[in-house]
Length: 257
Ligand code: ADP
Image (cartoon, rainbow, N blue to C red; front, side, top):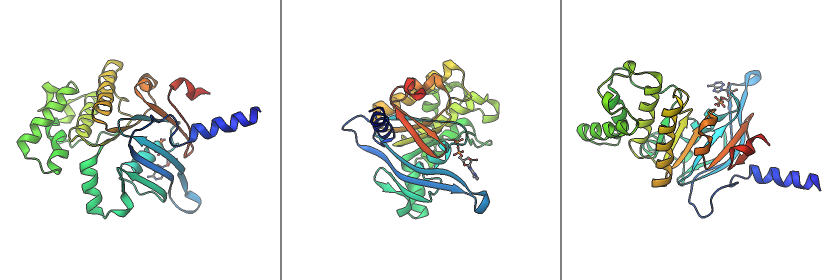
């Protein structure tokens, strides 16, 4: 009897739909995704078969020990890294079916990525940095800068728009990276440790903004984090271990079980 229950619980928790709200359109569908780095004796199997669905309007967090494959998975989902096997369909589009130009265009229109290292351009003001995704979409410079400044205001940096990144603290640069990922209203926002450089109060501001983006506009957000303070902003939390999804929960308390 106990065995039956245990098996049932395990299959439910690793079901790609586990905890997913009913009736929502699927934004991201991952099936049996594999990815290795290196060759021969040095091969690292970073993803060993990932099954996961992410709904529109959902904020899902990926957690797990360092090296378990979180960054690799979001990089595959965001189309910046090729998978080795399996299926990854984002808003009905499989990156493998796109050539490099089509893929770049798809990413520019649909994906916002907050990199762990921020990746800001040091010679551009922070408003110019944030305007880049809009310029890539073909928006005029002045309109793009105005929108960038408005987004910087939303992350509390409205008075710093003309500053170069190097004049800002790590936490402020992280908020610039978040503003840049949101400014073009991408349908999928992928964040690698978006609160790692932020104090508790600023982390709250950023998470409230990300949550608002997900709920109000039906966008999907995937957030890699170690920061337990922000778990409550997640609709679901997927715990990875050694390239697998170990469980998917809707309440952080259940991560320990
Ligand atoms: P996490 O984000 O959970 O820390 P990663 O996805 O960064 O995990 O890494 C998963 C595994 O893949 C780790 O063992 C890591 O060392 C390895 N790895 C990641 N990127 C590379 C790379 N470019 N070359 C070789 N190994 C890598």
